[in-house]
Image 1: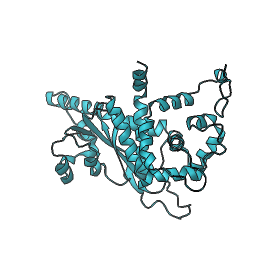
Image 2 (image 1 turned 135 degrees about the horizontal axis):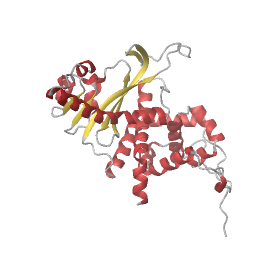
Image 3 (image 1 turned 30 degrees about the vertical axis):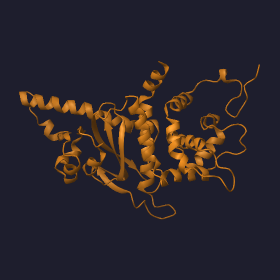
Image 4 (image 1 turned 90 degrees about the vertical axis):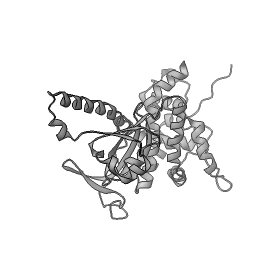
Length: 329
């Protein structure tokens, strides 16, 4: 009987190893990510390797890039993690016969390749097309919202200045420096279909029209989007959209709920709030599950690219159980 080959990721004693939450997480994501579709996007841009050392396979580098998004590793930290953690090497398809592992420069060059060809946007589109085919992304309505992503405010860096593309804004009584992630979410499933990145001082309502998927639909937003239906660019591009914007908190508090009209308006606000709540789930996934609470790079373009990949992965994370159950059935 032929024995199983021992590799960096296998020791022959797997039955005695506990299946940790990290292993369960990577196993589930490995099964639900549409690898062929994503690799097809990268293949036309992959280095040929005609000179110098042969490049690592795009499959290996894509797995490593997604590991970075899952666990918030920088390029140097990702290089060290590949050396330290067998589970990461197993997920990245790094075999025992390989005499070298990707270093931080190789990891950085792959990220730059994705950014140069705007593949973050294409990855989000490919994932959503995959989910639409499975009936998980219906696009029957949209919920729009934005969240602040902090950026380093220190000037103790090589440039001696803060990131010039980031700005500060006041929320409540506190000032924040960084960027905003604006998203459009499917009102039925809570999955993200559009991602935009701006400086933190950009008002939410200025990006509302660009967050729609172009189909006649109902759109829900919090009170920060009041007056959106009067904006010229919204009227020109989405004249048939029905906007459902939350009432200002003070105005709602002043409602007389004992009257029939006051009771109806309050019930309507509760219904709109339940629908809007779905937009918070993707934010929770990227901030709590993936730990993305601060910008990693300088400039809006690089950070927006990362957000597009993160929200594509959050979509898969949110429906992974349904996909796995469907595959098992």
